[in-house]
Amino acid sequence: MVTPELLLVTVGAKTGRRRTTPLTYFTDAGRAVVVASNYGGSRHPAWYYNVLANPRVTISAGGYTGTFVGHEASGGERDRLWNLAKDFIPSYADYERLAAGRTIPVLVFSE
Image (tube, helix red, strand yellow):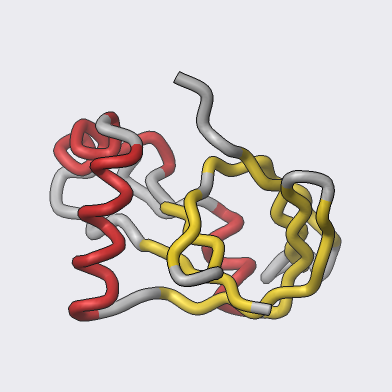
């Protein structure tokens, strides 16, 4: 299965340097949605902290590049998007088990 990928350009929370990270994504109501699974690791990925510290990011996908603002989904929005993510990429359910109690963040990016 081929999954769509975007390039997320963030500003490092600690370094202030630009960081580019390739991520799998899906869309919901015209927004890009990414999951900070870190392959089920015990810690969130660095790019997650970069987005929290500096939510204005650049995203390139499908030949388009633009400026977006990200936020972490919570409550019902997070639950709904997490279920969509697991339907889209079933291995997220495995990552959830591997994360051993860490709630895997779901981030949403809007223009």
